[in-house]
Amino acid sequence: EPEVTQTPSHQVTQMGQEVILRCVPISNHLYFYWYRQILGQKVEFLVSFYNNEISEKSEIFDDQFSVERPDGSNFTLKIRSTKLEDSAMYFCANGQGNNSPLHFGNGTRLTVT
Amino acid sequence: QKEVEQNSGPLSVPEGAIASLNCTYSDRVSQSFFWYRQYSGKSPELIMSIYSNGDKEDGRFTAQLNKASQYVSLLIRDSQPSDSATYLCAASPYGQNFVFGPGTRLSVLP
Image (cartoon, rainbow over all chains, first blue to last red; front, side, top):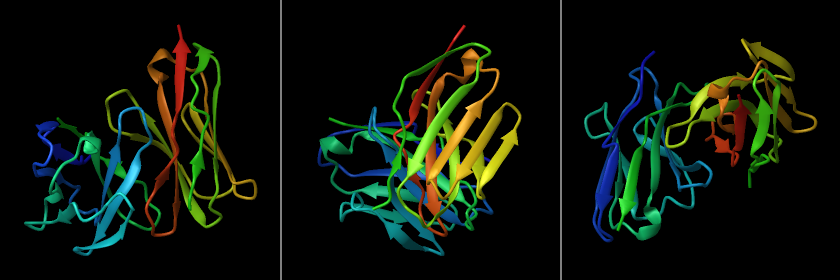
C-alpha cells in the first residue's frame, strides 16, 4: 500500500529558530493535511491544502506557520520562530476527498529547547 | 465548534473478550466517521470507516453508527494483546477537516 513519508523523524531545535517539516504524499491523493499531537493530548488539526492553496486552517495555524508544495510533490510545513509549546509530533496526512479516510505519515517529533 | 468525545480509559479486557469502545460527537453535519488505532509514539492507523447508520463489520472489528444519537462505537472481538493501543474516533463533515477525539486507551490482558 502506498505510504505517506515524512522527514525528518525527529528534529531538535532551539527556541526562535525556523524549522521545515517535509512530507511526500501518496501521488494520486490530492488533499493534504497537517496535524499535530502534543505528548499525551489529542490529534489537533492545523491546516488543509488542496489545489495548491489552503482550504481550511485552525486557530493554532497562526502567522508563524506556513505550508507549501515547493516542487509539486513534496508538501512542507514551516514554523518561522519556534516556541517551546510547539514541541509535538507533527503528522502529515493525505486523502482523496469526498469523505475518504486520511492516511497518516509516520510523523516528525519536534523538540524545541 | 465540533467536538468528539471518548472515555480516556484505560479500558482493560482479558484476552479473547470483546472490547467495546464508544464515541459521541456534537456536530450534526458530520457525515463520515473513522476509527484509528495509535500505538505509543506512532502515527494513527486507519481501522474502519463508516458513513451510514447501522453496523459495518471487517474481520474482528465492527463499527456501529447511530446518527440520531450522534454515537459511534467500535467492537473488537477476540481481543488480542496486540490490540492494546489508543483508539481514536474521528468525525468529518463533508469536504472538511477531520476532528479527532482524545482517544481511549485499551489494554488487553493475556
